[in-house]
Image (cartoon, rainbow over all chains, first blue to last red; front, side):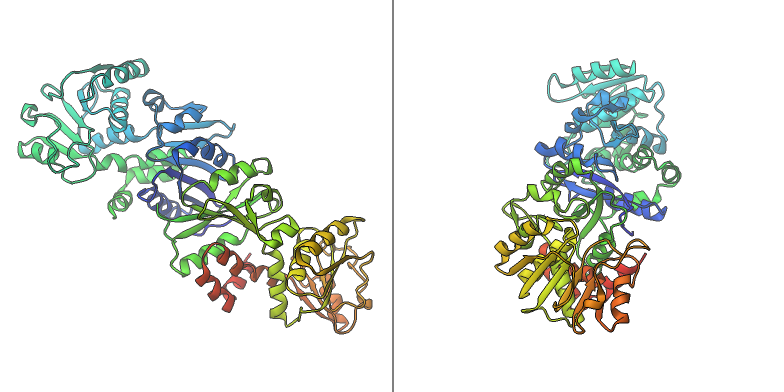
Length: 283
Length: 283
């Protein structure tokens, strides 16, 4: 990777930022495809997020921002435009400066999830889905399920009252049946997405009663640590089709590339994400 | 060069920025010495310079800025501290965030020149020097001559009245005899530095009458284009010791490295600047 004065620059904003994998993945892709661009980390503190982002995007050769935790929601207020998933969830993964100078954001977490369903062979169209946990990940998944053709999306969260407003926003944005449910009972659903932190700690209970799952329900647990997760193990012991959420991250890579105008690389990566999978698993 | 979330980031600010050589040089040195740091370009427009620089230096992993044309003077107003050369000239080449959060700048253009004199075998201590042209380069050279031990520094500029204030500032800062002179007549000086744009265009006159140079006067022409420059050629035809200013840029590299805390690399480069010379001449 040769960086010179002509190199186009992208920044990934996080706080902390040391843990981000995106520079390793996307700089590898830029180099492999002969693109004179680089993605570098910026540890931006929340109180300086808007100022940093605004001034960075005024630079002539800084074309966009990858947005990592904790900035995915905080950066939305500075956007001139936003995709439907970002609008519905109030969070984005990426921000770019358009040719007309406007600042536009988009969310890919959820589309990564629904594309991962495809790679798992799990159908989505018309299906009845339950999302357990409506923090950032759960809301993104619910939004993408609603947008991408689920018949019905049910939202459960252990914090009372958290799901109603989310359900209303998603219904309004996607014209899909999105409902708030008072229990994580998984009986009767075609698909269950787990998006709570349960399973991070050793003595965590399972997020729901796996004995209540129908035999043909598919389960995806987006918890990244402790693979295979306690939930995935419990499901598989009962013969339930259960998947880790890792592929959700893999499937986001082409979305970032398209958003920033690298359509050719996006197509190549979508057709064969082997390199991205390998780079994401490197410690 | 592997960029990850842990990489320390430096930016070089210019407008335009496509022509800068510093990323090629310093990223090569970082990589060669196993330093997890990167220098990337940022095309910052003058009206956004202070905002961009302030917010960039608030990021936890952005440790400093290389400052290229046209920002060397404009960035001085945001500094909390500045070295003597920067103070005397009102311009800096580099800005860093100190451990206490203060923003400090330093100028290396002039020290690059006086160190280059050493590599040319041109003595400086106590000598009588003439600087022809007091734009940014000339002022930086005059300041460094005054600081590094010249006996007397005379300043000439074709724009009337431009040299008096500069001479007064340098006298005050360095307690050296710095005077404004009304003519570029080079007779009687030990050293003449040429720092005007004359020689860029084909039909430019020589900046001074080379027939008036003493036989043992040394001449340095900092014009970078059209090597060897018309002035250097005219001097050499008369047997006068004349040098191009290229080495001035080479000798700045260790100064940047020390300023940003890379003392070991600075020492290595100072001892053997072969790589830096080669990278600076690559087109």
